Image (cartoon, rainbow, N blue to C red; front, side, top):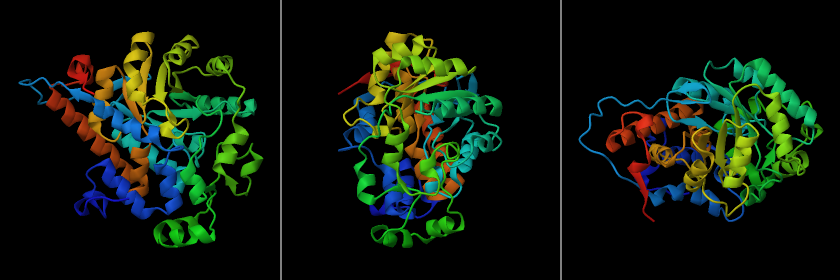
Length: 392
């Protein structure tokens, strides 16, 4: 990883972009763990395209408008949030900083937006429910063990989560070659190949030695493979996810949940329509951050077509590639209600724990507000298609 000498920050206060936080995360994490955050599947074409696709759209600003007061708040999933972006569900945050999921949840609460907890988290969903008063969503899969899926939903009802998110794009794990090369496993284990990297990151290593518990807390009691064994992440995913599930199974899950329901992993107009038919209140347009099918379309490119197909009622969330607040505004102008970001806050977490996540979210929030002011838009509802056009 290379940056210009002036853009090689050594502290959070010298990080002025998500890319700066990425560099600091690279400095602080063992090689295998950084690449687990940073990598995608196969040749990583989709990973790169998720971000570069935003460059195909250019703004058409309106000038000489009173922009002395900018309101970045919006309503999503029946909750008022302070910024038009939320935090995606990402697995095993404990890998990247000992503050783990609670640190991220607190940062989201301070920012006034949704925190999404992954089924693959290293923290119990009940513990997150009492960590922050901010809005919370739980992400679930349709496991082979249907009892586990139903149990997780009921636990979310009891813990008073605000929304449920079903991920549908993982019938098998993507071919994440970086993880294969680095020998990424869960829980981390030291090999001759990785020992030098772990030893050269003493802060991470000390936190690991103090608390080596990396159990996937919400499923560990039901999954024998996680009981004290070192298991390949890819093998775990392949072993637990069900290739036979269909839309009827998704509809059955929706029937178990009384609140706002999100389907994550929609990548076509056909699936977007089907999601609405089974009762999804929101569609997360996502290719899993470029970690599943390489060659998939960038989420932002799908927004206009899906919006035209499903109408105004379902909320659309662009998930993937967001590194700048201006990209969030572009997605809104194309017809999305919000964006969702994962790597951006994980870089912050790895760079500085809760303070690093706050730094990442604050940078993005400031960029959203600045972009809106320069566009001549004082509120999210003012952001419309006449402020953007496709230029390449």
